[in-house]
Amino acid sequence: MMKTRILDVGCGIEQKLKVPPDGELVRLDANPDIPADFHCDIREPLPFGEEFDIVVASHVLEHIEHDRVPKTLINLRNVLREDGELHIIVPALEWAASEILSPKTSIAVMGLIYGAQFTPYEFHKCGFTLMWLRDLVSITGMIPRKATQSQFVVVAGGQQYPAIQNVVIAMRHKAFEKEANDRLDPDPAEALA
Image (cartoon, rainbow, N blue to C red; front, side, top):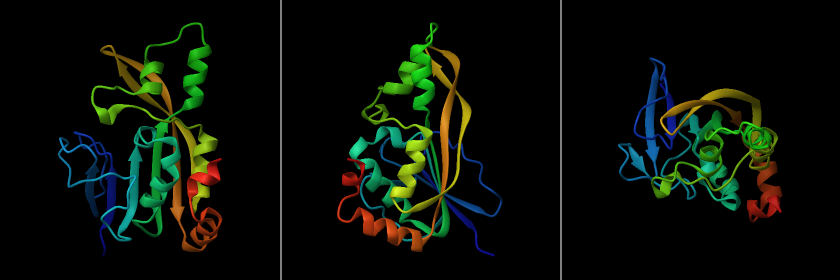
């Protein structure tokens, strides 16, 4: 029986993913100071073949420049096996907007919009609504299987604040991918204009 191969993109210092007993976890981060199996920039093609069953990008895409997100998604898609899944989790821009308009805005919303900013890797450079993220995975040739929101905790000023995150799970399917590639050729960022 083959092991389930999981790529944790932007893994950070702590291993947070639960890996099944038959699973193999590969940790990747752009920050060379993070203990990871690989250090590379996901905005560029990754040093893997089509070898992962699951790629997890939890609170990563918001650190990528808006116009580079489509190519980044394609880079993540390209390391998945056929029918492999990309799990994307990002702060919910909808939640941030509702917090900004609320009479009791929490300090957490600023961290959600701008990032922690303690290192160059912690700045937020874009944001996503759930529908926009779902559309992006379709534009880049994946089939959205699930699009939902869930709660998570933001720590700001030493306190914990409840927040909302967007979660999209997309599947790689090469027939769908070919149609998207034909639409995107030569530059997926132009499809966003």
